[in-house]
Length: 117
Image (cartoon, rainbow, N blue to C red):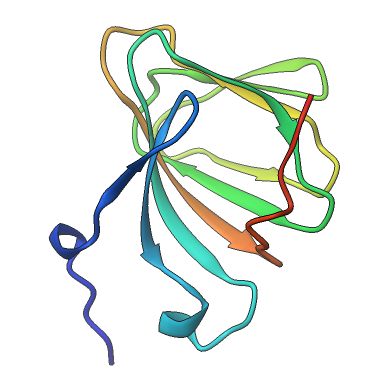
């Protein structure tokens, strides 16, 4: 059993978004696994990017934004799950006046596996 208090984890500001790592591979005892909380601030856009190795599974906590995956707009509702595979080009848009918040479960995570455009 392991209890992780979100209040003990810090938000990190990135380009167009903020993230809070909830669980890393040490917490999970599983190489390449990562769970993070993501927050896209109102009217922000995370530019198109992709990963060559990792898979991302997103669980949406609200419906304040949308994804564009391989050129296709994906409207999301609270409780939806979106799976992004390696080489899927994706961007995130928050068109609302409130934060767009979701959880990311990452497999084969590597901090250097991030490519713009």
